[in-house]
Figure 1 (cartoon, rainbow, N blue to C red):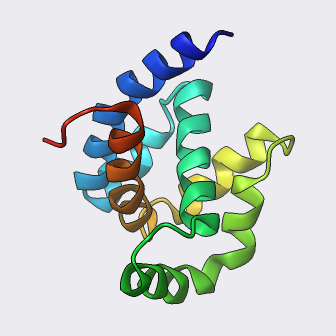
Figure 2 (figure 1 turned 135 degrees about the vertical axis):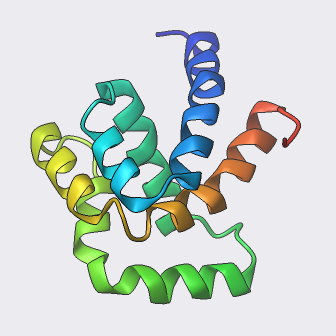
Length: 120
């Protein structure tokens, strides 16, 4: 897959990520059932970026670290490539109502900056 097509797919995924971050818990969990594998991969990548990114402001990093500490092992599992996609989807649905909006709202601006999209 070329870089251009990955870039295009990420640009197309940003509205989905914004919608997921604004949904209430029940709607978000039911929506996670119907997402494609690619959309789930983007969410897993956002989790990985949120956990391991040093470019976040210190206050936001501290908030994320304390919030995610309750499910630290699950988030680390979701961020690893090569793990079972079926198990990842099940785990994401289990915790999807909780910290997912915090993760998405902290990574969406970074994605927009990298892709050169003006925030809306």
